[in-house]
Length: 346
Length: 294
Image 1 (cartoon, rainbow over the protein chains, first blue to last red):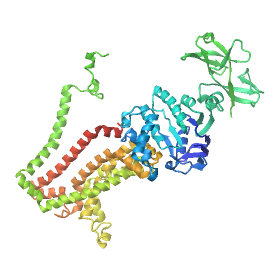
Image 2: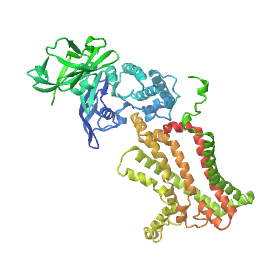
Image 3: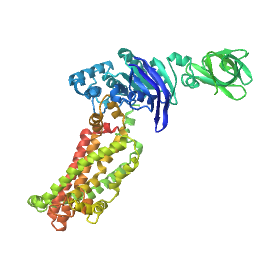
Image 4: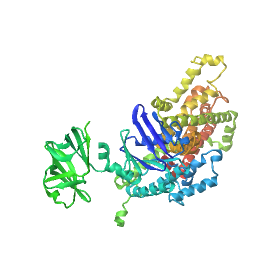
């Protein structure tokens, strides 16, 4: 099911949580809403579900305007951050709940509900745990039951709120791959919320980066990482270094020196230069480069992170070097960023 | 690491570490104080009640209970409990739901108001009804004109009992529901359940043990309430006397055996309540703990 969000605004007691958000979710897509806490990602997910109503704007399921439909009418599968499994019901009853509460002809027989429940348990690889209670399951198992329960109602869209947030790192990685497999097998249109960029980039077909109630950028993992379109995305996704610079006639300057980068289409004035700390070219002689004295050097697992003091204003910038690179021993290092981007200061 | 000598110092219970466990004499002293206190103030009176009740043999005991006035008092007490406890369940669940599950103006006020019967002397709460419904009261004239009798009759007793007991169910449910939050209800709705299905299949089972506790306590108080009921009842024998009031009347008439016989029923009720509560905890302890989320 295709989901279209058009110019949605959401206010909580007049405090805006989302400003004018628009997003097209394609049918069968696995999409991640990624952002720091307070970015509005969970609010957007709850709006799609119908757990919240938009203050302005509309949400379409296919061609149908679902903005004012109740959550029951929308027929979405929602997996809650803390699973919200029914404590007093067995695993099988939890999964069958959505079928049991149907009315009249839509309600399958008890036997059929049991059959569906164990079929779904097979799918989430928990066969044989029908009679357990949620309290008797591990965190990862509960997460799987929650997903099976959401899928039991044959939802039009599957929505997951921080699906792996409460699990430890090891289980989280396993479940990530497993969720991708499930998605590929069932083909549900799936939206999940996460603050973990690694999770979003690895798992999703497309990533929606959000900040302060707005969508910053939508794109594949490659697009988001390689061509960030805002300072926020550049610094939020992956490692980044930034330096304030000046642009004059298409040349980039730090303090009183040009650094050998040309930006012909950038207007004159103040700007910030972003680059990845590992994506640099070290230079011996500095004829148009960024040069600085080594202020600090830290060993990371496979590399060495060097902090350079550049210019006269105690401006610091971080670069990454191979562990045994001779430059790390020197007191002065010169380099030029490989891939970089300028954002004018407004 | 697996040195047996070190292991022997491990506490039996994980919440009791060696550092906070008292020495043997201190522990013994604390336990003696607690048990002596309970013995003197709870167990001893209980023994006295039953002792006095059976002082003149079982024949006199059953005779005392069989007297028409006593039977009428028992019936009235049961009636009052049968009306006030269900009303308190409805009120308690509504109030707890409102306070725990959504925001509204006046929430803090409602929360405070629920505690009022605990902080006000029962005699005062009875007196309020006299001032409201009495012949010289605010609504007295109007009630009289319409031939409605509240004071010194069953309705007054029921009202006073409801007032005194209404915190019990609500107070038990509010913290429980607040702790559980809205997550389970949202999950049920997302799975297609309507409001009443969500209530019966999800909300109620989640709070059923707390509710049962509240009902037990509420019932015990409803049957045992003296002060508020005493003010509004009028003490008409065979008509508006509940069991606690009847005990007092019999005692004041130096009819000790009958007084203690009725008292023994009330004491018996308290014991049954305690036993039920303990049985519930033993039988469903794990489930209660799970539902409470501890």
